[in-house]
Length: 312
Image 1 (tube, rainbow, N blue to C red):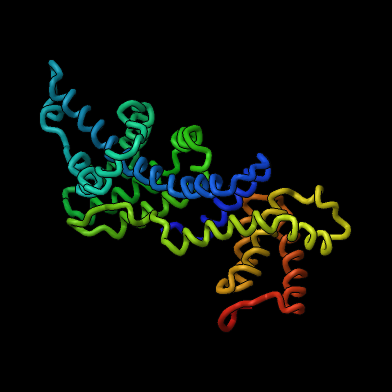
Image 2 (image 1 turned 120 degrees about the vertical axis):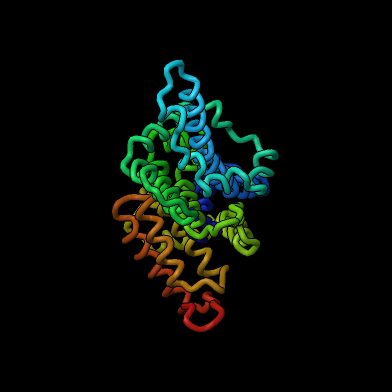
């Protein structure tokens, strides 16, 4: 499932885009935000189908070698272990993935063979591949371990592939780690005869509600939060505060005041960690300081209304 941190990052990016464009069409922006979050499933399917297409290209090479005029005995009797890998077969035969492909307009790896060839070449030259192909044993577990190692060590880290995805959809830069981690986990949990589906990246109903509410409330209370931040940063001109820092602080304040079930410690920790990846080097300290001051004020004034024990 898409986790809350990923949702917060998507909301942060959407708020930034809205503020930069000065858009006031919230329903339209909310719809685009939801669409953007769900695009991660598209990347998930592309990554899985890339492994299938790599297998298919390897099979094509085998058939070409068989038809050589001076085909060797090895050409005529090739090692089929990789092309018969049971885990890749499960991906190729998944009805849920087939249905998704039929309804979507995903790129066809057959028309983007450059990336398929690059990764197949890297795979066949690797010690991982050679050890797997030379093994006399044959089992679903061995196939699964091989595919997991292939995905983790060769396919997922490929820089050319990452650059290609970035050129297709900039938001996939943030989705890439989540999608790859989800795929690796799904592969490791596969049992013989299981079907690999898409439930791993579905957004739960309560998470979708959280996403829309956080986005809407943070946008609607922009001015109010700006004034409160001004009061706690008297030595700072708000225009000198990094845009991303302001957005993260305002999102945290939104959670403080309008999400009673989320502990304040969780909120603070989440936005400090996001700041480390998406803002300046010292942003996490600045954000922590401002939130700490405002949290004390909210507690003192009684504005903070958290439900349950240990939520302050």
